[in-house]
Image: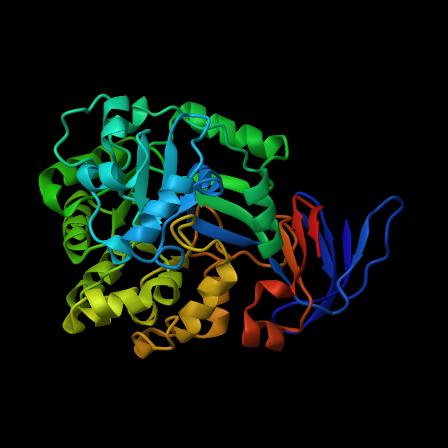
Amino acid sequence: MLIQRACLLGGRRVDIRVGVRIGEVADSLAPRPGEDVFDAGWGTVIPGLHDHHVHLRAAAAALDSVQLGPAQVHGRDELARALSAAEVGSDGWIRAVGYHESVAGTLDRSVLDELAPAVPVRIQHRSGVLWMLNSAGLAAVGLPEHPDGRLRSYDSWSDAVARRETTLAEFSGRLDRFGVTGVTDATPDLDAGSIVKLAEAHRHGELSQHVHWLAPGKRILHDDGLDLDELTNWVTQRHSAGATVAVHCVTASQLVVTLAALRAAGVRRGDRIEHAAVVPSDSLADLAELGVLVVTQPNFVAERGDQYLLDVPADDQSGLWRLASLLRAGIPVALSTDLPFGDADPWAAMRAAVNRTTRAGVVLNVGECVLAAQALTMFLGHADRPDVPRTIEPGQPGDLCVLTEAPADVFAHLDAGMVSATVIDGQLRYVA
């Protein structure tokens, strides 16, 4: 296809011929016979956004799950009503997501037995690493004697839960509207069959976006099971096989141990730290020296910042969701949303990176704010090199986002409402 009257981020006005790859970029290009033409109206054209850390099947499943986050439910009585009104899914379960202790305190099997219907119930904590099951649910997964029903995500118990048949089409269409042309699935237990299904979903059009994945090189750590020697051996084995690693680090302890393991095993190009939710000041130099990529989510400052201000000691808040200090230290960084645990809108994540304002209007760590151009660029990286931004040049991927506004207004607003068209492999996937 041919995109005419496009404005690039640097201000140059061009026409763009694009297929699976960008073919030509010139001041003026004449349409060829049979070629589709899209008039950008001097709006800005950028590489399509790539969300560098998502969970696709969880995102699709969340669309028909009960939402129990602090924005939807307030208190024990509302929680009981929400669970009583929930529909049992085709898998025989009530599935709920987004729970945080600020809703109604700590949940365990005894609390859920009081509040929930006598059918299998599983509630995912909004961190994504914990599920709470009632007694019926524990019996269904073969753990009737489990003491509290608080189970870690991706542990073997989940194999006993029948997978719901979920379509990716609705979720993919939403990403189209955001200008997202590619995603990296960070689910740690993706097996070969699941990867094939994602590839087939893209090939058949159910999933518009290109998919990259981290499994089997993704590892989730827990503070009560940190083992430096074991982690070092795992990293060494992955590297010996010519592969990379991606380590989930949401606490300072997890980050410190991961950095020690990487220092002992060595860093391979493509190794990643996922989240880096808490980075102590003395870890900045270690990250910079190792040169390992950090994929982080500033959207959580906007989405959960007010709770952080209550839960995190004041002396530790400066380490939360760092960004500017990572860049100043020369650490390669890319951004993502962590959907469905974070909101799917990457433009909202960019705004959070720029202003770091919580829902209550408090600025959390003003020194970590970045420029709009920096925030946007960190969503433009290649799937396999997230720190290397794609550009509008011949030979680059034919995945583009067309915006209604000129570059100055794009940087001023960073708003998904500006997306007028999304092009993937040279084909229009979305037109506003």
